Amino acid sequence: MKKGWKIALSAILMMIWVGASIIASQLVVGYTMLGILGSKTLAQPLPNAVYSALSYIIAMVLIIIVPPKLFAIYGKKRGKKIVSKNTRKSLGLTEWPTWTDIGLAPTGFLVYLLLAAGLTAVFSLFPWFNASEAQDVGFSVYISGIDRAIAFLVLVVVAPIAEEIIFRGWLYDKLRGKFLEQCSNTTSMIVSMLLVSLLFGLIHMQWNVGVNVFAMSIVLCCLREITGTIYAGILMHMLKNGVAFYLLYVVGIS
Image (cartoon, rainbow, N blue to C red; front, side):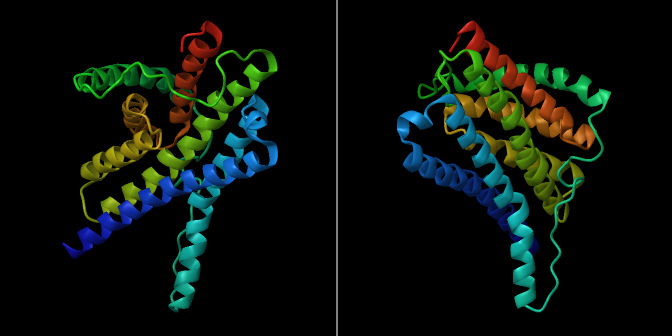
């Protein structure tokens, strides 16, 4: 029982670390650029893209690189050698994408659409849930030309890669391994999927978007379980964001 509580506490702390790192990186980069450029300049596509890229980079450094360093310092002070390192395998980045990854991406996308539709229908029964509320993605709907290309790079390429490395790469692997110390393989998988997806939904800070990306995260975690990597998840995430980008910036459906 005591070990179970320690595992639960470790899982909670890991989730808090991820959430706090993402928020902190956004605040630090955002307020720094705001002070240097001003609100009008920061709202333009290129500065906005730089803000997003820097935020993701700092978040990944805080989440992936900093913890092993802290554990090493802590172990040294206590006279112990604590090894906590991240590898390409632990992040789901071994080898290269395969044809299986490419094939599973659209399949996963269809499953996600069905799951998201089901969850949205359930939550729509509550009066406080607004399924049609627009998501603020940081870019104006009326951009075109080079500005639209910049938005595409950030929303369809950078964001899916960074978010998959953080959530279905680092966090899912850590939670999966931690719960395996106390639970069965199936229980560890289910609990890890739910926790990762819950946090992924919460950081989007909007009910309808949170429910949607919760469903997406469940499918993305399943893809990692099936393939052992996050490549299929990255491709599916890009597909999802690409469709949303097309509807928002090409067709003009907000």
